[in-house]
Length: 141
Image (cartoon, rainbow, N blue to C red; front, side, top):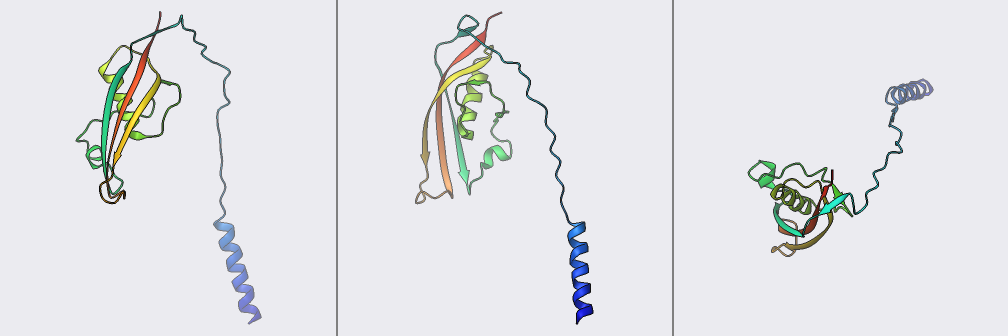
């Protein structure tokens, strides 16, 4: 019995030794380069409006998943102000930039959002519509 316990402890120690984890984290230092803009540096447009709709079935947007609706790259929109984490709002802002080429950034967007979940408010089926209104900015040369 004592021999079996020693073997068990040895096997557990070896298993823990081989399964240990080591994590390396490398990052770049933050540079001290900041862009300070004034109102003389940016030309602002009149407010523009765009809207986007997503239909989620079981929490998945199937139409964009299979590419039937163009969504574009929405991860890196140049927004001055507070960006939102809502994907539908990002789609609306992307559409806003696509409809008005020549502008460099979105300035303080405002959102009007409606969510319709007809099946007892559950996320089985939901339709989200976001109307985004914002001024667009163009850097002066």
